[in-house]
Image (cartoon, rainbow, N blue to C red; front, side, top):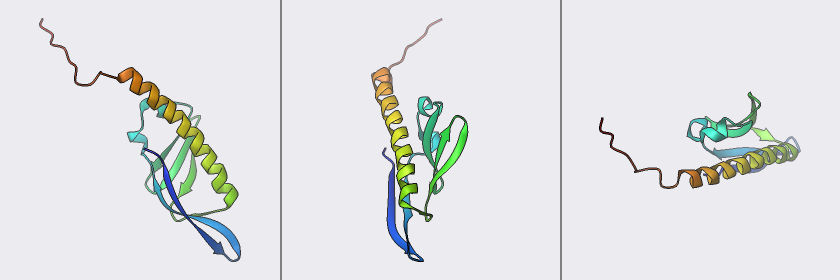
Amino acid sequence: MSIKIETEQVLIRGEKRIKVIKIEALTEEALPFAYVNGSEFVYRYNSGLFYKWDGKTYNLLFKDDLYTEDEIKNQLETIKRCGNILQEINARLKKENEGWEGKGKTYII
């Protein structure tokens, strides 16, 4: 699943801002262990998007919050970098796990 962030451009006291309208992303519990056990990853919790890096959690974006263009640009770079990591992990896991489900063994002892 891709991360989807809907925004709206607004003016606040003459200043350009970007308001986050909607965030669609996976929760930490829905992401592969190989991704969430890595050094950095992004996930959704409630109405926010969070970034974990080296064991520390950072707020990226929240629904209804306002951001400058530079802030959004920086957050999107982080999200894209983590998305690329997840894409690589998903491709590797797909290959490694191909044909695993549905197979079983019967053990008679």
